[in-house]
Image (cartoon, rainbow, N blue to C red; front, side):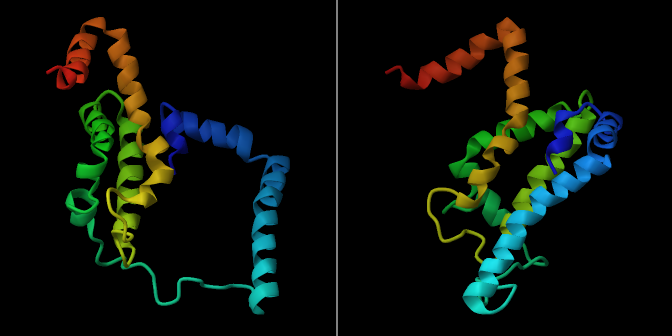
Length: 174
């Protein structure tokens, strides 16, 4: 879902997919690489339980029609605003640069809200953890991608470094 972020437009992304992924040999090798671990997992389930598919979460599942988005964003126990405020820098940057980087902003915002929606739709949206949502750990690298663009912009414009350095250093001065 985040792969298009690395391209400048839908045309360049489509050209990449058409050139490198829609070849028969690439598709067949990719299918084999994809199918081997899945076939292995089905085999292990069949060997252990007698069934090819095993749902190990019992009565747990997703509440797609009642996601707890406000709790995921603003919850005091583990809302991402309080426990991962760094995630809002790339979000704000994507919104502010929407006119210049429309494609990247759309891809990022869709990805961000998809991750948040899926997380908020799990029956236990807080994952019974304190101090942050552990289910976001796998996504931090991708959720912080616009932050890298922001750092590149800041280092290109030297005058922006002064407020960043001050904001970073001032809290430590007594």
